[in-house]
Image 1 (cartoon, rainbow, N blue to C red):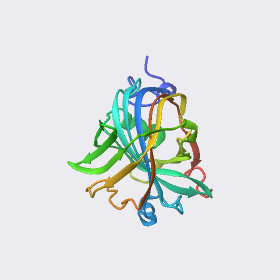
Image 2 (cartoon, rainbow, N blue to C red; image 1 turned 30 degrees about the vertical axis):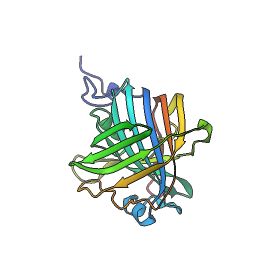
Image 3 (tube, rainbow, N blue to C red; image 1 turned 90 degrees about the vertical axis):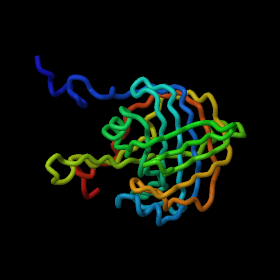
Length: 248
């Protein structure tokens, strides 16, 4: 008997490359460094549906996933920039770097997260967490942060909405089949935060030939945060479909 089309949700049809959500994560170490960059740098990477935030606030994130039931273990780094859409303030992720095989297509196809492959290295140098992202042997983004003070998770800054622009092109090259605004800020459930700390952080960007973020040189810093946690990742929210409702 052939595979019913109604039962196919990814490829290969007979054995999908990655499981569908929910995805369970354990032993995740994550750092966030908040900093100000120039408005002009943000404008260059924003799709026109967004307007840059007035403050130039950005978040550099590095994380190490010790275990995931859907994707195994991997390292990741993400840049998020403050912006608005229809008067709502939030953050947009222009790029996410990973050293994963299955998490990259899952993130792109399900959530529209702009994941690309890179050599992402995460380690602890005494009391400093280090996330280095290398492309073609050059450090495209380097994150370093400390964790010297205890912090109640309730006092973590709000990083949502967390927007992605999900775009899938047509096979014949005549445009796109999918263009949706996705919010990923509420995908997590069953969250257990084992460690929550705050400290100081720095971020460095260098010129690379692909996915270049060199314009995001920090102007000032607003602190750093560190967590060790377990959580379940569920589906995201489709906020707007630009093809179905192009005028809204």
